[in-house]
Length: 287
Image (cartoon, rainbow, N blue to C red; front, top):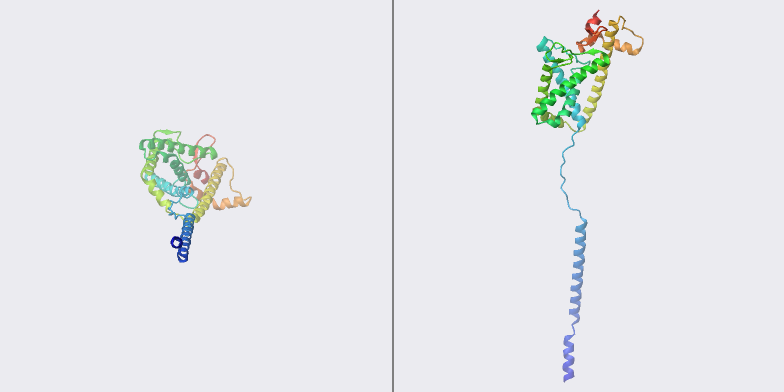
């Protein structure tokens, strides 16, 4: 009886075949789930997180900005000079008209140099005013000195004005130009910069290239005309005949840069004779 009871207890302890199959199936399912979880986690690590693109502000095109400074201030400077001459003498004649249109390169270059030197003082009114009057006076004196030294020509003479320096600069004109510079730097420049920066894209670049070519040709033609006109005046002053058609270049000069046309462009051009007296080029060539 005891042996039979022991055999029955052992038989009850042994698992059934169906239970073993269920347990093995459960183990396989759990293993497959673990593998799937591991694979999904690996995939998640491989996938890069989406980063939102932050729109960066467009880079400022310095050449574009300074090109338009040159154009705008070359035109505005000429208009200002015409207004001043009209108030003074009821005439719009100005020493810096051009061969192709209302454009004066000296004002444009002067404006660019002024902005480059003064933009660090923007907001500091007293410093801005003091440095502006010094800078404006130095540039005007330097331009007058260089033009006279290169070609012996004088475009303006302030010797009769109050508080002048060698007739090249005077207090009144320096103050006028300084006030204009300070007002521009404090109140107008930021709006002008916004307007210029709005001009962007491929079309703007094409326009900039075309304008650069036109301005370059303008400068070359103006310098060429200035040299021809002053040379003709000097030759007549020295008793020589300036009219000659020896080659193609001289023929072009006589056709394009006539005395009548150059007198309208450079009405205040004066030539210094051997005695140091200043004589208008127009009066020399009329003889």
